[in-house]
Length: 627
Image (tube, rainbow, N blue to C red; front, top):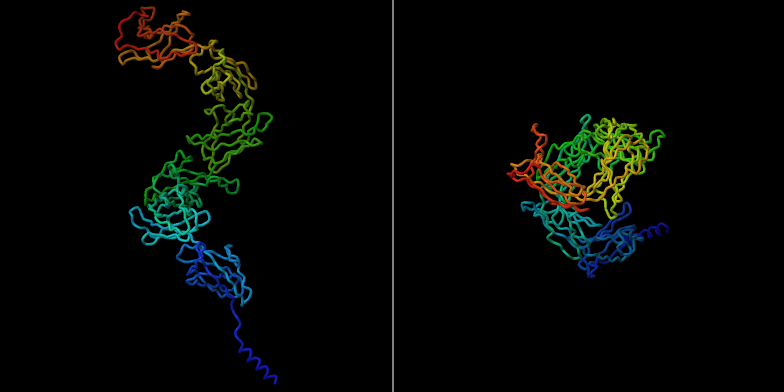
């Protein structure tokens, strides 16, 4: 009885309906704008658990779909091929949450999930070469702030970028091998000049066409100066000259080879070396120096290369060398007080026009000069205002560039302990005075010249001291010695009250010399031109005689040029005569004989210049009485 019952139960169990093996997820895919169903939309359930199968289906003509899913976790994705509907991912709530997880709890669940899609836009056009032929397999890219998509042109040169979200896109065309110059809409090779196109919903934007130009190529090798071994990983930059410069970058391979492709026609400056701001390996190891083609250390000396379409410039090689360093300290002599913020200035001897980077001393007075090519240098400095009483010198206490000691630098080597010990110089102060309350000095042209009179083996240089608006002038850090101070003023109407004008002073280092003043009064001047024909005496044979009727004095001036100015004259009436230089070649006569060619009566007014007083030598001068 028991056996029968067991067999009967087994038979009954086999006769029951099979259990449900999947849950149903169904719904509609509709247009977010019209609410109508979208046929042929592909709905995918992407399994998120390992070993779990994914599933997909296609909507019917009313946009309905049905998915049978096993228990687990899924992401639901929907897209419409060959359309401008934007693909989306949906979570269990049915909202666009970037792919929320949909949980299927049991095999017999039933979930309704309606999905909506938004229509985007599209961009279409054609690509052709310079000869009007269509170009196939050209990569077209559309890029916005949050979206990027690409496609390729067909055999007829056409392309279509579909399913673009609304927004502004930069459209570009090119090839991965850079056989053509990359182009950007609306027909420029400069990315900065590109203009975005506005993509709108349900709009097909056509006519975004491109004409591509065959690109030029520059290639070569990078070697080290020492050992001539190839250098890997060196950046080569090609900068196109013009109003909108373009830069292309390549990196040398293990054999030192580089290749710059995709170059539009034009002139390029090439440089090789580390990029600006690139750190030095190991922190304190010498870096390679950047070199401009052909083997120049500054951009201004570089020679531009002309690139033409489809042209390859080969053997554009670079030889790199390692930088040199100079380090040292700037302190005061005796107490060795460190001097901060002193500019240390290297000047190459054999690289005219090349200006290496300067440096400044730190709080300890230390400085470090890097990025120097090998060669001979002089080392000078520029003191800040707080140290202006100190004597500014070149290396080894020289006072001029001509006498400065040279420093020899070898490639990749550091030169240390190049120290400066500065002493206090003298300070000179004075004023250029004039008894005219409203008079204005020209601070850009009015100067007092400080000239060394005695010999200094260190090579003292003359200095020009600027006259300030109040007429004052000053100079600090003057080495000891004997000097002359001479005003060089731009106003020709000024008359010095002290003669001779230069003032001679003896300077002791560390002293302060004050009240080195000059006094002037305001007079007038006469200026004009002297004209002499080809068959008349030349300027080197002429003189101007000036007679002051008030003071009953006369002065004689030689003519260095056709334009003349007689400056610093007292107001009054003058007689001006143009004559030949006295002839002193006749020993039987005790006086020289000269010929007067022209004369003028001129009134000189205080504070004014009498101009255009022109004098002329006639081609065939008439015989006149000797003067």
